Amino acid sequence: MSNNGHGASFINRQSFIELDARERATALFDPRTSRELLGPFDRVESPWLPMQGITPQADDGCVVMKGKIAGQAAVVVALEGAFQGGSMGEVSGEKMTAALDLACADNEKGIPTSAVILLETGGVRLQEANLGLAAIAELMASILALRKHAPVICLMAGTVGCFGGMSLAAGLASYIVMTREARLGMNGPEVIEQENGVEEFDSSDRALVWAIHGGEQRYATCLADALVDDDTPQVADAIRSFVSKGVPPVHRSSQGVLYRNRIDALHTSQQWDPKEFRALWTTTGS
Amino acid sequence: MEQIEFNYPAKRRVRKRAHVGVVGSGDLEVLLEPAEGEVARVFIRTSVDGFRDTWKAVLDRFFTKYDGTVRIQINDAGATPGSVQLRLEQAVEVSER
Image (cartoon, rainbow over all chains, first blue to last red; front, top):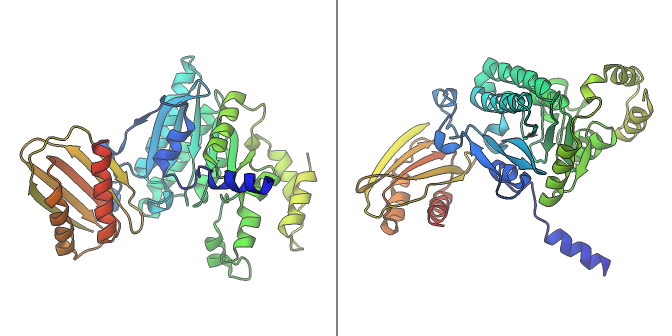
């Protein structure tokens, strides 16, 4: 009987991964409290893509919404992974940074406002090169300013994952929420294979890739704060609980000594497998 | 990238705008807005050059049934004619919901 119950809950599950960026952002707010800022009809799109023969998107693949989460003011910024791999360009970067800066200004005026960033991104948009790099640097400064006042929560649901410069931005988050399907890492599997060869990392070995970059491993090694199923109510619950929790006493990125000790304890003379790594990483230096 | 424009006669006023789709491989984004005048104007930007006749065939067929006075912007990333047709119908459905 319990098997039937489990099957029904699986079939009736509302997938979060299947939603597009706009639907994902809307799903996190308290019902009927959200509105979009600088939406597609404002047509603030990348001026650089058409020059290179690439069709732009009317919102540059970045959805900004304001509303309430757990009864409290919040801004949600969602990257659309299907458009140019969710990459950060001049416009999408500026939209995200401006949203966080406005949230920061609201906090300074005494209106507590949290931020949730939905990352499905390979990092900098190579077609916009230095502008994309500058956008990520500005975004990181904005996260650091805002997280003193209110939690900045990064959510990776999949299936693009979060890589490159945006993984560094995610590293500054107050809390990271992932699904089992999501991936988080500085260098993506294809990049490692391209630079160091297939002996170093076989990007077609999905079991290996997810054992290293996947949500389950990131959560088990305390690099993510919550692991949720691909289920919309469950994802929204996790976000609400972190918004209510407020600013953490110590941010992950402020624990330099702890992580330095952990890296020192990793002897590169031997090949670590993901399981051994998990055991070593969680028992060292804490 | 190729830019294509078409105009079709129209008479019915449309009240709501609609945005559907994403500029992802094999898909497209449609922005449909109410407009003045007795005409429906379609602006297309597509990543695949040389398919003007195919676009015309798909839109000719769409406008045999649709008569809203609208401005339609299409941002295309290589969608098939079938996908284009479905996205256009979805945009109409959203705008009339």
